[in-house]
Image (cartoon, rainbow, N blue to C red; front, side):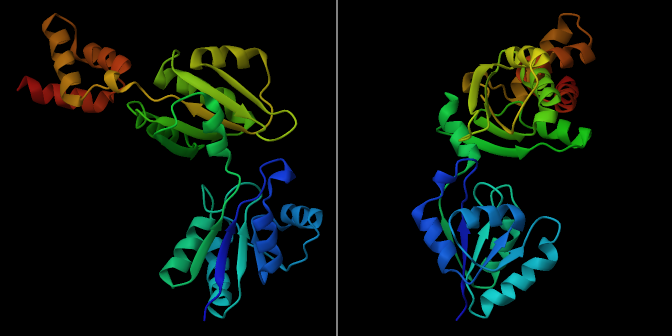
Length: 276
């Protein structure tokens, strides 16, 4: 009979947030797979838990995954932990869970901290429907394409961001989503200097011109209001109306794209098709 993989959520700052059930699970498993064994060792020492640690992270997941699976299939139980938060959420643990699911190994989640959900809860923005976007790519083209795809998103959007990349990210948001779009900037969640700043994107850009970003951020950005969402057909009609009034097609496409969030290329193609 195969063992069980436990996904154990760990504190994102305050050690008091580790649940009694999480402690019991870490004490009961045969071994623990950790994103960074040095970080996890500090947590285990704090709770006086002594268990064998193995390394499992994005750089060794391809090799370590089958090894962990073999031990689980042999009957051992394993707790998967990240440095902070819930394993498998924006995390290489996703691949291990999939591997276990494909091979009939039981996977159980021991719930706890998740920075994205905590930030959403305190953001003051709509929480009924949201999309988790994680970290943006460092590749400029991929980053731009990712954000372009979200211009017409009506759900609340959640991003992770490092302090040294916060300013360019806010500038990108401001250009793509507009300066009036509401945002909640949540930093150092559950830690001593926890702060949530609620403002518009334009105000956020202005604030961080004069203040250095500090700590890890979760950015919660409002989606476009449903009544403001414009279909491609409607956008194309707006472009053609501007063209009929004497505006050049290229300029008309840019103007409509800027105020609707529709992509320029798709608008241009739709307008050309509509002129036939």
